[in-house]
Image (cartoon, rainbow, N blue to C red; front, top):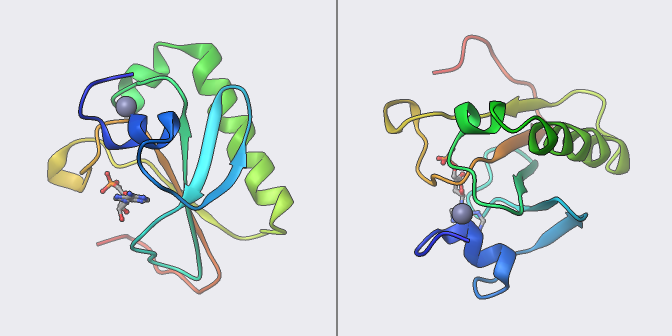
Length: 112
Ligand code: AMP
Ligand code: ZN
């Protein structure tokens, strides 16, 4: 757990969240500022700052991908977008790696 990390606080239970799914390695909860009818964040329980660091931890990376797959299956998602923002310039605001999983509306490409 990293001090002053919002998502470590959610893992620890000191910050409230609308949990959607849990397993030993990951936690999934609703985004408080949803950008689609379905918008959740999938995070590793352990503090990993971004996808670059996640890539150096194959077990954690695999667990996160399995959790994304499970979230999609358990919620009947066939079409969904998965986003990892990496760095403040592209919109990362919480530096505990998280996959946004968005679904439930048409989406355009390229992203803004
Ligand atoms: P990013 O900007 O990619 O780092 O994504 C961070 C996301 O966390 C944003 O979409 C926020 O709406 C979301 N967020 C911030 N605080 C909370 C919270 N306490 N519970 C759930 N989602 C949050
Ligand atoms: Zn953290």
